[in-house]
Length: 197
Image 1: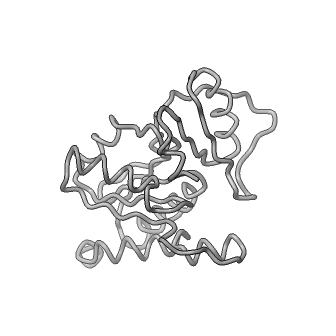
Image 2: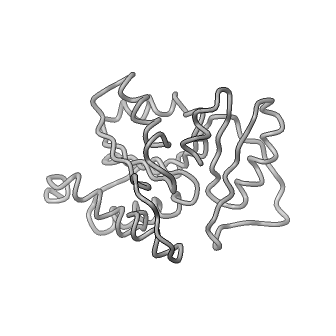
């Protein structure tokens, strides 16, 4: 859905990390005055405070949840939790420090933040529960290729295959979107760094 929604001119595409952010984006969308698609967070354990008050989120602005200098995770929707857990494990067990970004807007991208992150010269890992072709990772790669061109980008998501029926947990493992699989992928792409530390 993220890939085909990205193609619609003028469309804002959001993927909240949890129920509280879903409420905030729904509240904010009314003020954007453009068509908005909000992907409902699928994880049954997502955080939601039914008594919480909605707050406004600026259209197109992402949120840095953790600062690090070795790798950047740009996580969409429910993959934010996995990215945070992977970052904690990378720090604790491998001395690799990750920046974790809640990329709640798939479209428009937070170009100012992307430019700042590109200036750090750290590899970028995008995470999405969606098709990679034309999805969020593609958008990030396209933007960085046009503006920078030298930052390595690895995208984790659904390859050009049919997804089998299974539990959500089994599917995330199959797709490489669990914290352990994300850690493994980072170590594969940064073997010299992992060996040095």
